[in-house]
Length: 220
Ligand SMILES: *Cc1c(COP(=O)(O)O)cnc(C)c1O
Image (cartoon, rainbow, N blue to C red):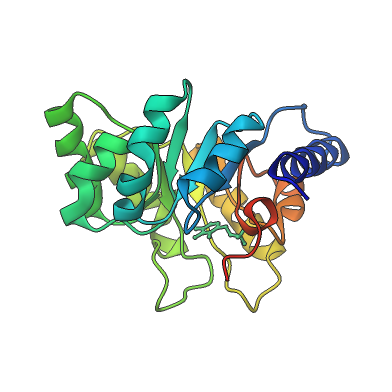
């Protein structure tokens, strides 16, 4: 299958899941996760019409995206992987959306860079819904207070919440928890769902699905 055919298939499945859930057409944004794939693979997907992309490492994105962005109008780049505070300046300069705000130190660093650079990405707070020790994200019990501190102490608007359910769990309860937390804290964005479960996520309210392997092929 070509990149264009895979993209058409995923868009079709997103549209069908929107209809099934009784949600308006176009309410879900596809974030095409291009991590580990080279510029030529990305160009095929851009040529097929995709403009919103996700990367999980700042350094890899810096090597790949400045020229891809310069080549094409309307690219929107999302950081979906953990952000270290020593990479904040680069991340604020390159990304249009950051999905992984999860602690005060990072929120403060993003706010400071926003002032310095006169540019602030849109922001999502990552929630560790499975309470996994090795996984980034704020404890769900602390999410509401953290979002409030982002707003009042750091002066940051938060657009939504993001989660990555534990690989061994059924994803539905994690997506439902994220949706409930989003409602509680008053944000409209929900970044949830990947190649294997994006239709379930759309059924539970996802506004952004992050799809890599189903679009680009296996990462080997
Ligand atoms: C890699 C990655 C994805 C995409 O995963 P696929 O299973 O390839 O669709 C989504 N979200 C995050 C945070 C990732 O790191």
